[in-house]
Every structure is written in C-alpha cells, then in structure tokens.
Amino acid sequence: MAAATPLEDSPGTSPEPAWLTDGQQRIWRNWLSASSRVPARLGQQLQQDSGLSLQDYEVLVTLNEATNSSCRITELAGLLEWERSRMSHHLTRMEKRGLVCRGACPDDGRAQLVELTDAGRTALEAAAPGHVRAVRSVLFDALSDDDAAELGRITALISDHLNAQECGLARRG
Amino acid sequence: MAAATPLEDSPGTSPEPAWLTDGQQRIWRNWLSASSRVPARLGQQLQQDSGLSLQDYEVLVTLNEATNSSCRITELAGLLEWERSRMSHHLTRMEKRGLVCRGACPDDGRAQLVELTDAGRTALEAAAPGHVRAVRSVLFDALSDDDAAELGRITALISDHLNAQECGLARRG
DNA sequence: AGTAATAAGGTGACATGTCACTCAAGGTGA
DNA sequence: TCACCTTGAGTGACATGTCACCTTATTACT
Image (cartoon, rainbow over all chains, first blue to last red; front, side, top):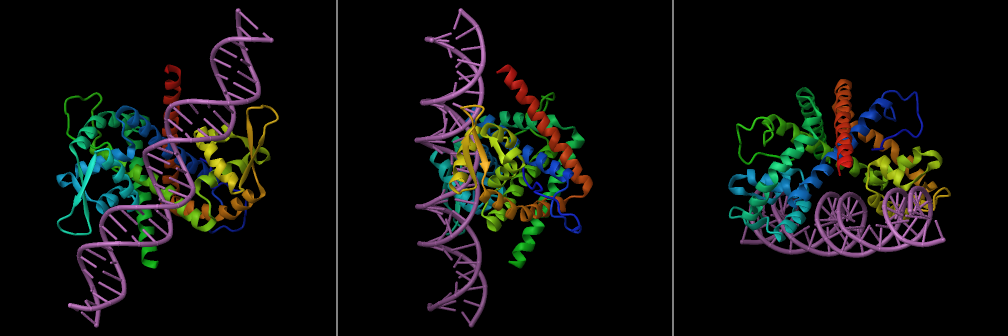
C-alpha cells in the first residue's frame, strides 16, 4: 500500500517534481494493493485445493506448453521472468516432490533439461480447472470486457517500458 | 507469467467456461508480468540506494503518516494489508536495525505501539526522493495521464471486488 | 592447440512470507 | 467472581526469493 508519499512538498522544481501528485499516489496505492492481493488469493486457493503454490503451477503450465514437456532451465527462467538461481532452487524443491525431473541436455553439456513427470502432469490437470475458476472469479468477474482489455493494454505498456529501460541499462552498463 | 492456460478445450459448457479465452490469457499474463516486475525493480533501486527493502519503506512511510509517528501493530498491518504475523516478524528485523521501536500501549495492555525512531525517519527522508523518482520512472513515465487514471480506476475495481468477496466469505464462513 | 571470456547451472547464507500455534489481556454473562 | 470467548501479539517451522560466488562446458580469439 503505502509508498512514495510526500514527506513535505517542494514547489518550484517543476520539470521533475520530487513527489507524486495526490492522484498519482492513489493510483500507485491501488496498483500495489491489487497486485499483491490477487496472487495472494490465488495462491491460497491453489494451495488448499491442490497442494500447489502459484509458483509450482506456473512452472508446470510452462513446461506443459513446451515441446516434449521439457525445457532448459535458463529458457524456463526466461519464460517466467525468474532469476536462474530462483528457478534452480524451486526446481530442486519440485523435483523432491516428484513433480518434475532433470536430465542432461544432448546439445549442450552445460545445460540441463527439466521435464514434467507424470505426477506433475496429473497435478497440473487436477489443479487447472479450480485455478482458472479462481482467476476468473478474482480478476475477470470484477471487470467488464472493456476494462479487462484496458488492463491488458496498460500492463503491456508497463512491461514494454521496463524492457526498454533494461535494454538501455544493459547497453550503458 | 504463465498461468491458467488451457490444457485442452471444452466447448459447449458456455455459462462458465472452464478455460480462459486467448484474450483473457494475454491480459492475465501481462498483468502477472507487470505486477511482479514493478516491485522487483523498485526494490532493487531502494536496496542499492538506501539499504532499505520496499517493505521497510512501506512500513516507514505508514508510520510517518500516523499521528505521533506511532501506531498499533494490528492497525499497521491493516493499513498495509499484511498478516499480523508477517508484520511482527518484519518489525523484529527493523527494530534490530534501529529503524523502529516498540513500546507498551497505555490504552490496552495487549497492544504494542510501534514508533519511528530518529534513525528510521532519517532513513526514510534519505530514501524518499530516489524512490519517488523510481516510481515515476517505472510506472508513470510509461503511461499517459489518461492511461494512469484508467489503471487507477481498474485496480480500484479489483480491490473493491476482493473486499466484497472477503465480506461474503467472512459472513458465510 | 591454447587461453580468456562467456554461459549454464548450482550452492550457501540470508531476507522475507505463511501457517499453525501459544500466551496474555480484555470482555461477557451466569 | 469465575468460566469462557475474543483479541493483540509473538514464535518456530518451513517455503520462497535474492545475492554473491563457484564449477564446468562452450565459444571466441590468437
């Protein structure tokens, strides 16, 4: 919720004002609130109904969409926009639970292929309907089709903007 | 990113379809991506420039806005929409670093008052300008004023919807 | 071939978040 | 007053995420 609130105002430095306007603060706090509560709710539902975390689910879905239900770890991390190290830790935990398995990659001795196990696929198939219902209930039931489309458009703008900034950072740094 | 993707399609069950439409999937993934990347980026900036986490910052801002820069723990947790236990753990860490302190509450023997220390206020004041700049840079620079207003409106709809659902759950359960 | 740079992946330490549980203080009604 | 319930807070175990660093395999350059 709270963030970026003015401690005091500094008029006169107009080109890049030091503080957010009241309107921007409202927008910012709404955004923070919604973007933390939505995954929290979905995670609870998923955990209770299927024993999977939202992160487990995302990994399973992404693997399931991949050719042969398998994927290099770095590629998987890229698809989910996770750090490689985070992915490595998470796969270790999921492997321990039998949801995925790792194997050598024939093309590249450095790489590992992660693969969906039968148990992983079963867990995904069991979890999916309830999760989709929850996504609909939490997000799409709150919005008209037009609002949803607007949300998609605006979040895409934000992502593109972040990509552009990362490009710039990478080039400069 | 990935979530709620169809494993197969099930046409004919029109009233509450089992899967998200392609359009909804795109919206959903955009939303997930943006709502995880924005705080990640801001957290990095804050950590590097001020040694504070985004969570530290939110606590400091909220306390700073409170009367007497102090607040009951449950109230603080409510304002930030955190679980009490999370707040308790986090305050323990922040107290260890001298950013806040706890004290007895005169009105209620069960309650504790958290208070901003001088060091906490100093840290906040040092961190705020850079953080505000980052929020602007990451979010508001990506959006026109109209888009930002739309984002605020839509995220408010989502929050209200979640509130309504929680009410219903509380009444029923 | 020989070597430096890069890329893939893993690891350990630590910060953060959640859940179930405990404890103590306050309130309520017989 | 006493039993009982509720509320505020803390705790321990564990899951998750980040950072810095390591090892190994590939690539690029000479």
